[in-house]
Image 1 (cartoon, each protein chain N blue to C red):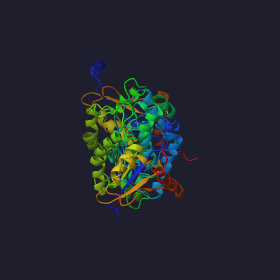
Image 2: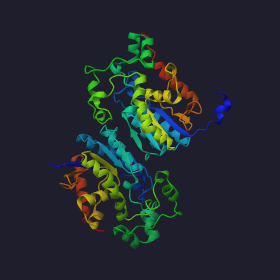
Image 3: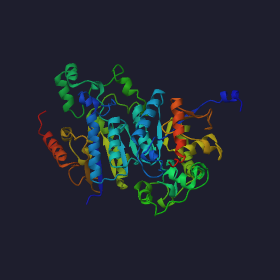
Image 4: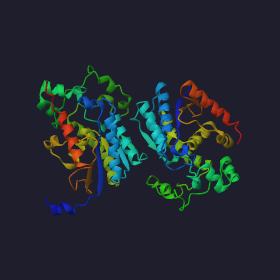
Length: 267
Length: 254
């Protein structure tokens, strides 16, 4: 498409995606996934800073979507608090949960990278359709996840909830929710914030921006940085996604996430 | 054996409480003391092992943030939360923003006494010239309210009249489905629910000041009638003090 044609497409809808900030396990480089870790102090700060930024830029949200995981909900609350928009409705769904990492949940990324090699870990983290090994009852976090009452309230029975997911499988369970619940609100002209996770946000981007299965591997979302999408009447982006805020800080945040995938060298 | 349990919590001290100003629909935040009250209330619910299925609150941050502190304490942040203007605090109209001294000066002690003692006499309306008119009446959160619904002032009777439809149409059906309900709201909107539940007279409800930051538990039969008086949750001293304060209210000189 030529630049001239891009200029003619009008932005009709605006949507903000936000990957929550640091949790205790992010610091330890462990796959947190469906374990309900809280935000660390740093993660709380990231959320507040994000809220301040969105307030400065004059955002007025009408509706917020989060997952069922506390860290995404807490992030949404902190953002709304900073903006004085606590009254905005917040809707929660398991379909926006982080990607389910199966048997890899709780494992330290650096150790895994040393055992399996950086490439294999990168494949599990970044490939589109390779599912990690399934979690089972012998896993130390199995009970904590599946005995949690919140998973008895979902729109699928607990036994049908995932036991591991590729990014493709994340989008498979997210897309029906996007279409039935999020899209109608966008089409009503509501300004929406999605407070989600690295992979649920990437899945949304893949769908909205039409990113290929191969290219999505190279999309890294930094934590605590709001991502603005401007969409036309067909919900197609009219311009590239915008990461809001200080650009130098954003680049540093992206690098931080990318470095987490790399193994620590034994000394 | 009670069919249902209902928990109410009145938010704690706000920044304007500290200044003794009529707050109403002004969106004052919790003071530090108010935050502590909310956390303490949450801890009491956690210690007693309360689980909820659905939460209701107003569109004012002092109630919403109280609910958030509680949900964090009981580790149930994932619960669905419904916010409604119908659970807002009573709208104090033209008195909004005035402190006690200013109010007496402006309107005279006698008039203030009438407003304080009356169930159905509203304060003067908040008109377009009021310094909080833009801030409140034109706030985006009230954009969907009709001209009839958006108050310019309220008596206690008015507050209750707009709170009860929400109780009856939204909350009651959830309770009857067996959902365990938590309501975080304000002195006067909660008075509406309490008056209704207990079948209290207008005089009696005006005498009742619900304690702040303390979870109030009702056990209800299948017709949603309380099977006993409201109970307070907390450590022994907190609960005793709250019960004594409530008991003393009826005897207080006006």
